Image (tube, rainbow, N blue to C red; front, side):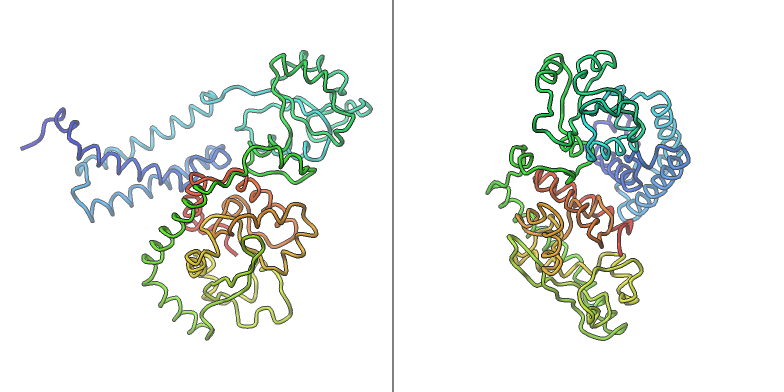
Length: 428
């Protein structure tokens, strides 16, 4: 006997099914970058990614309904819902983009100073229109370069006229990017505009807020000392360690059937040894032996240590598959269980490279203030690093993580790592 619709709505099992289906659809949208404004700004990208997401959702739901028929809402529901969902998603996204429905309106920004960090920030803002920031221009310290274009916005005045320019240009926010602060900061004028309702922000704080990294360009120790964050309470560290153990054991149990097969594939492809062992710098600079499935030929560094390169000839045939799927990283879970690593943190670097990088990059040693990680904020936000400049870029993301470390951030990074691994991004 068919259940009347009002009674069906009240059934808890129905809401469980709806929640399960909604979760799968949401994950499909997320894994196909439909929450990334940089990807879906163009209509062709939006259509392609929406079709991919819907196809993935249909496949996963069909698989779910086959394995567990009780989770299905009915035979005809999916057939009718798929085109309806596609039409609603596209119409909503296109109309929201066309009408700026979700936009707060552009915030008018004035850059005070012509430091390199301010120029980098403006370039980043121009590349991300979804920030809804309108850079009106720069202020020069003494006004000698008024009219000169640094990026796209020009130098429109000097420090002495900041109050007048703020009023004329209806400025909402001032970002400080001074080449030299001592004796050059117009304290009185800035106080006046501050109490007039204009927000004032340091360029490093703005870059951190917008881009999720702490810019090293002209970063002073005082900013790190006085900045909020960098808290590592005993409770947080204990909870983080508990999560490391629980998640590592769970993953090892799940992948344990694969490990003998991987070992056999490595041996048949290039002989032994199966594992790659290498000393890495850990917490407070202490060294430990990192474990991986070997993905390179034996004696890969007979000519001395060097970073992995694009299309590295030292990587074996099986090694390329292992690196692409990140299966070579599985043995590092034993490093996590031993307490030498954490699931999330700055990636451990070799002591040889650490000595070089600490001489070349300021604040590099700060990344050793916590256990290194199997994954990290830099790994999900930055490309594969294999140079001094890449190491500097990764450190900017690592500093952001150290400043904002929490269990919630760790969970977000692990979730994003799963996306990176499944889509095979950034491997080398």
